[in-house]
Image (cartoon, rainbow, N blue to C red):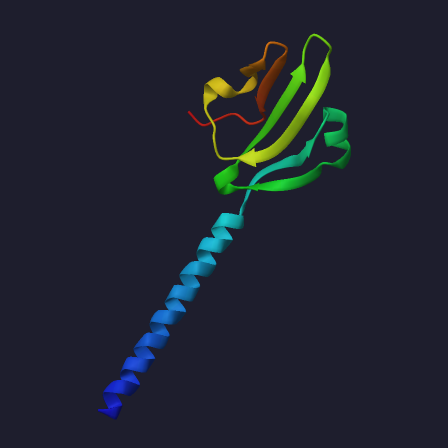
Length: 118
């Protein structure tokens, strides 16, 4: 009986080591770079955002750099700017597009800085 328990414990230890190895491999894949960096920030204007932006590598799962710029076009005044790595990517979204009209004088633009795979 003790021999069976001993082999059972060895089997459990081997299984545990395999689980740990799989988790480590998953974490390494998640943090692997997509060779794209993105100046991530969130601020009230593009200038303020750029001055404090941190160049971060995007992960494989978030391999698109997106800028969301909300502003008052009639006054050329920024309300907010956010830059970050995101997963969403579609060819029709590349470039500067009007995302939505928030208010009669407020517009939100999304700018994607990487070509999407077809």
